[in-house]
Image: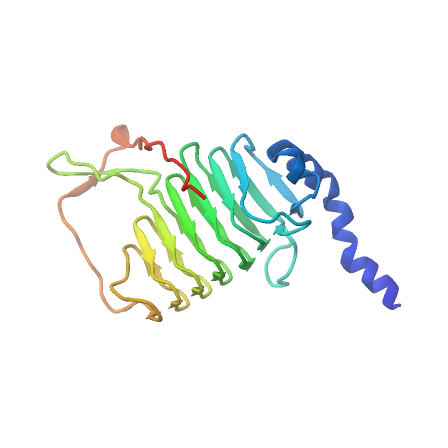
Length: 240
């Protein structure tokens, strides 16, 4: 019985092999691709025209994307859409019911030893930098663009996008949302259900949470559908 249980647990690797082989040889240099460092489980590919860069030592199965690890979320693998640049600096785990979308001018950097067990939704149309040893709780949402632009009464428009940075050894608990122009210092804990619309005013080793009793109303802003268009500036990857 034990051998059948082991085969069942490992059978996902065989099911993932065709996607894994195709993606590695499509996106990586041959010397890296032959090692099959990136493994996909139940992928839903949209665009794969962007760049994939793996820095440092390359090992087999070091980057696992979509594998089922949490039973209360759908075993739906991962949706993958990359028209920009994704840089991996080491091993990474992004589990089931997740999605990654990188726009044409977006640069997503993922540090070594990222753990996101399930339901990560990550959108990068400008720049998202995740440092080493970051842990993301269930249902984390990271998005560096508004996708739409509101217009102030004097005609001004905000930029509509901005970088997101997560410092090393940070734990972001479940159901958190990070939006444009947010920078989290290293070694912090972001409490469950926290929504960050701007960088917290704190240093390293901080607990970051929301106050939930305040409602803010701002006048002099409107949404004009005809002006709803963001032009993203072209980014350059950080030098290794």
